[in-house]
Amino acid sequence: MHHQPAYVRWSMPLCVVAMVVLCLLPSAWLDWTNWFGAQARVVVSPIAHPITMAKNLVIPQSVGNPYATQRERTLQSELDRYRSLLYREQQENEQLSALVKRLSTGAAVTPDIAITQIPRPVTGISREFLVVRSGGHEQVSRSTVVVVNAVQLCGRVAEADKRTALVLPITAKDAQPLLGNVMLDNTGTQTARCMLSPIGKGLLEGDITMPVADGTGIPAATIKVGMEVRLLDDQWPRHAQMLLIGRIESIAPSPNQPLRQRITVRPSVDLRSVPEVFFRVPDMTGGTP
Image (cartoon, rainbow, N blue to C red; front, side, top):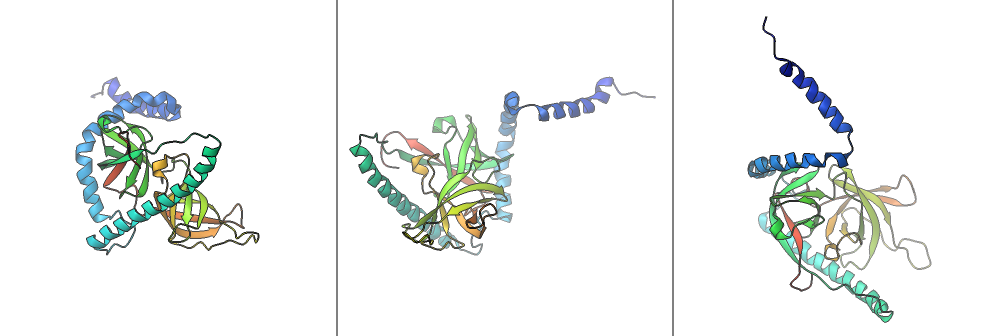
């Protein structure tokens, strides 16, 4: 009777035991495994991008009108871009008003930083991360802001090397909560604050603090489904402020505070299916973001 060598018989049980032990170890002890992931991305990246493009043909990335023509999508993209510029200018006007007060007390001022947007293709997905073809020579580094369609906030770079960058989308379960502004009108003069956290299925959720009329305690405006939510968070760079987080998909009473409302927000695109992203890299030659 033919017997298999001992190393063949024991290879599978040893692999299972090794996997169980690795799963129980703290993540800080597993940094050495990143080398194997980097080598795998070198092999997979060249074929992952065509596969992603083919998938996007079957499952469109946009969650908007699927019957919109290319011209309509282009015009909508331009409209969103100019609205982002408008909201950013309004926010900067408010900051400048506060700046005048700070200058009178001698507070320091942070100069403006020009931004270069670098388009790069998404080659695949690794766990919660988007794998993006990148390069260290492009000044892409950890915490670089990443957007889609110029104004839709996608996330931040979590790790970058000479070939690829791993981007953690704002909808990933490990993403940090975001502070945002709900735009209560088309001019951006009335807003409401909210703290949004990812809840899965490409959505974010959080309680909203509505502005009240002076001396009445009554909300000064009404929140509605479809309203835009834009980033206004000191934990993000100044040039990222007022980028689009998404639109309100549903409104319900907060389970913790029934007198407050909780909103569910969906980004304008499925952030796990985008074929291309833009790195927002500071341009140190000068200018205004």
